[in-house]
Length: 176
Image 1 (cartoon, one colour):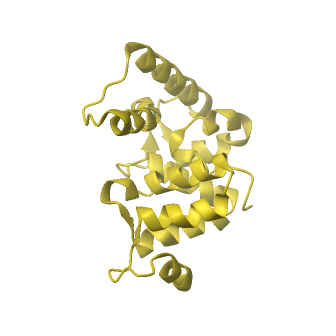
Image 2 (image 1 turned 135 degrees about the vertical axis):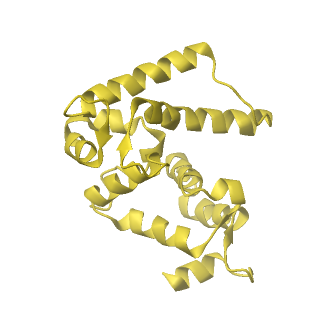
């Protein structure tokens, strides 16, 4: 993996992959597959590379591990990505933030406005999606989704998981 990282970060004495290198590599790899290309864009954002504009070796290792992991590992990584406060739980509020994130990120990119807001319709839609997810996945109905709830509910509610941005590209059929 170290060799792969070195190849992707070639000509970079500080040993990180910048956005141009990432794009060049995956543009060649994905060619005309728009969905696959979008997945790699999501990975860049999910690993926190968008803010810094670069990917370090630790982030690269996470990217490589998720790509080859089994379903339980992917789900656990997905849970951790959503649980930004490392509280070991997801609430309806946390889920709303996860659903809001891609919309706001895209709006900020398009407008350049760092204080982009959701419309009232978007807020209502996101609130309904977060409530539906919580009701379906929260096994003991205490308003808190634990990792155990999350793992045990995936098979019965896979379609709900697919709608969560933080899980996009992680919880698919590949790599099992």
